[in-house]
Image (cartoon, rainbow, N blue to C red; front, side, top):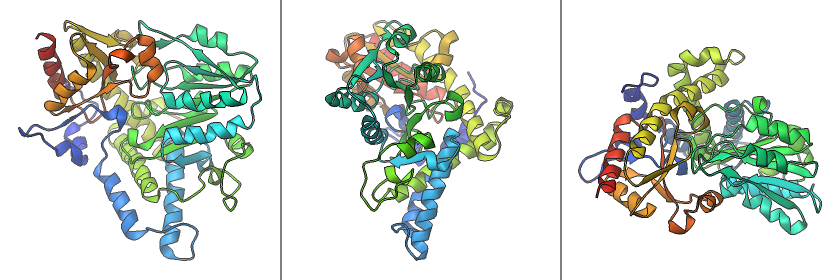
Length: 426
């Protein structure tokens, strides 16, 4: 089964980690991408170059400080391009999505009153639940929208019932980091805005797998993490400028009072920002090389924004057959339960992240066996605690999670299936 979308012989060579081997000379297989992807050499070089040539704090009257200022500006513009944000001033960087969300939730909490309501979903990572639950201490009411356990899709009827005139914010994931379900965030934004509420989108898991357009989905806030799309450990938040400008930030007094600076108080991770720009440029280069078949989908874009859109469309088209083979293979094995959407005709509604359990083994035992074969996967709840509790697997160790990225191959999928099959038939 060939896949003509991406030339892996060219692409994989850019990732030094993919050349690592186990004790038998077999290349490591990285299916651990949902927890953090590998990085291309260009990202490593950019971070090293910053530390070598530009390492300084900002706003100084000397050359390395000016280079740091430029690196920061470049990262804001690159992330604005990646998300199709109108302005780089609508991008806020931080250490990770969780810290950014706690930060912005505190600022939003200053606008709320006892009895105001926030709607979250049980399909989300806890980083898009716990920061809103923390506001309960000031009298905010948090409502939990359910999901359908059979296919792990969000219960849109339940969500619609919970969104009322009392709702001030809806927090939802673009894609589930546990079971891969992609939510219709554009439709959910319409539902929130219809009652005057804001929508806060966690796009951490979706960002490596598809194009994001904050203007098209009409979200108020969106967060993602560069280390999930081939960059360093950095988080990024988009917010409408008028909202970021209005919200009162928690900051040191000398920090600027305008966005994004007022939410980035303190010294930033400059080398991480340089690496983030490099990761986005890597994807843009990917689009320039392989994205031409998808260019007609984005007639309104040009330059780097066009290349980023076509890159992510190509990535999505490449990854789908790998996920299809993995799910089909797992479902043929005795004792295996695959969670989420399994019907290939509905795969537009899922990311290539596969969660499963194997009867007779804990998820950790399966992960350990795969790890002994040089195949890296996750087990547990991956901080999607509400998901594993709702599915009834939290007490038994959660699930095994396998994440396909665009540097994975069908041969790697087959290696994983062979190991799981060996366990299944024992």
